[in-house]
Length: 187
Image (cartoon, rainbow, N blue to C red; front, side):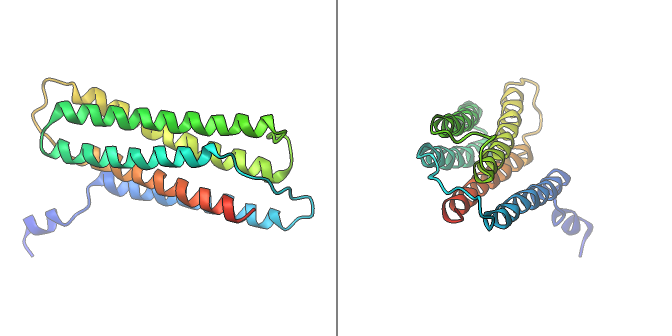
């Protein structure tokens, strides 16, 4: 195998770091859902319906996965104007997702389901809030990429940044779908 071929087969350090981070995040949420299952066996567990707005927010985050994938495509085609629009839209959809989740929290509170309430309710707040934080971290990364897209002195158009951001975004999307299904089924 030639040196060029070996170099081509290596994973970029940013992508490698992302995979390590996603593994850690996955383990954290596995811990949360495992604790949820263990606590659910206790006698004082309260069953309640998740806010309907959580399903609406799911459609928003799914749409945002489409927009970020389109952003990757147009970046590779060097359509920078369209790229800026798509990462801006993706970031905005991420903020809308978080706002809808918070709306879900206020709906829960309006029904007397507060963080200080039963463990089942507290778990929902903690799990969903941690997911919101991870989505907002992705929004920050997209905003950094947005500002970089406006630099005028770009000499190298490497897709690594947007590929890393897209992978992470798809990850938080898939993670939300898992969490929503889990929390809907494991009540």
